[in-house]
Each structure stands twice: as C-alpha cells, then as structure tokens.
Length: 233
Image 1 (tube, rainbow, N blue to C red):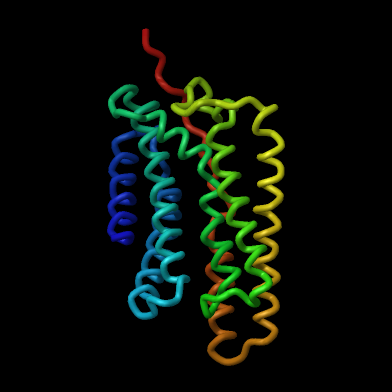
Image 2 (image 1 turned 90 degrees about the vertical axis):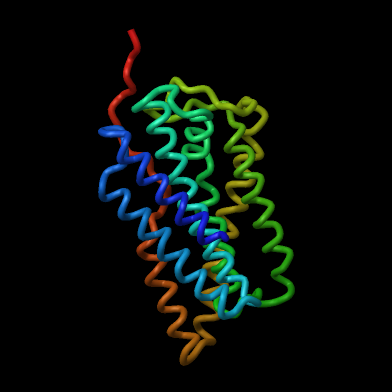
C-alpha cells in the first residue's frame, strides 16, 4: 500500500510537472527525485516483505513516500499557483508542504542510522535519547508549518492555509527542536560508527552499502529558481 502510494504520487508529480511548462521541474530534478523515491521504495519493499520484524524496511518505505509527497506538493504548487492559477483546489497546501515540511526528509534516515542494521537500538539506555529525538523532529515540523514567515520566491505573495504564529511564539521552540534534531542526527552517526567498529563480514558490507546510498542522497529539499507567476490584468 505504501509503495503504491509512493509510485502514484511520483507519477502524478511527473504529469503535473510536464503540464506546468516552464514552471515545472527540470529533467534533472525529476530524474534525481524519481530515482531517490524508487530506490528507497524498492529496497524498503524488499526488506519489509522478507524481514517484516525489522523496522528498517518500513522506514525506507516511509522515506520513499515522503520524497514522493514533497515532490508532488511542489509540482501541485507549480501547476496550481504559477502555471494555471486557481486551476487546482488547495494549491496553497502544496506551497506550504513543499516549503515547510522539509524536516520529514531527515526523520526516517536519522531513525535508520540509530537502528541499522539489526533494527534495534545499540543499547537500552539510548531509548530515552531516541524518544527525545523523535519529539524534536515532531516539534520542528509543527513550528515550521505554523511559522509566520514569507514563502520563498516565487511564492512570496502566497498566504499559508494554516494559522501563522509570530517569531516571538515559535522562535524558541524552533531553535530548541532544531538543536534536538541535529543532536539526534549526530547521535545516529555515532551509533553507526560504534557498530561499524564492531562489525565484520556481511554486517560490514551492509554499512558500506548504506554509506554509498547516503552519499547520493540530496542533502536538503532545495527549491529551484523559477519564472515569476503571471500577472493577471
């Protein structure tokens, strides 16, 4: 089901991008995000069907769904706001998700780093840190969606469909949750380093595979520069 949603979202994004003309994604962007979605979804589906007890497969499936959803949101915004204003309902949601839901890109990968390769935390005492990290990502996502900050060009004139909270309200939670998410990311890297030192044979090969995949993954969801939207007379 998750894999089907990812593939459907990716296909819909490609169609909308193709119909958005010069406002749509470039061929390179489509290929990059498409390959990232297919790779994460394909490997996740393989692991989830063969080793259902290991959460890594399910996390990879979730990661593929997130990538597809963000690309679909961007394509939806391109078509409904820039190329054909008003043609799609809820295009403002596409802008919001595309611009502000970026913490989701790192959540699943960070979780995988903590439990790779056997699906368990390195030790029981690290459970509290993992829980704190999950809370940090959740808070970071919420305050990012609710922040009263202008969208980047060419969507600077768009209003958010959600209530907007001022900097005085979200500033401190954003900073603390951002630091928590960053610390969780570094914690996952340290956990992997510890396990790599103790690994041998197949487990060491698994670490090399993960390092190769991580090196090819986009570091962040970077918005492209696009022409300005049409001005209606």
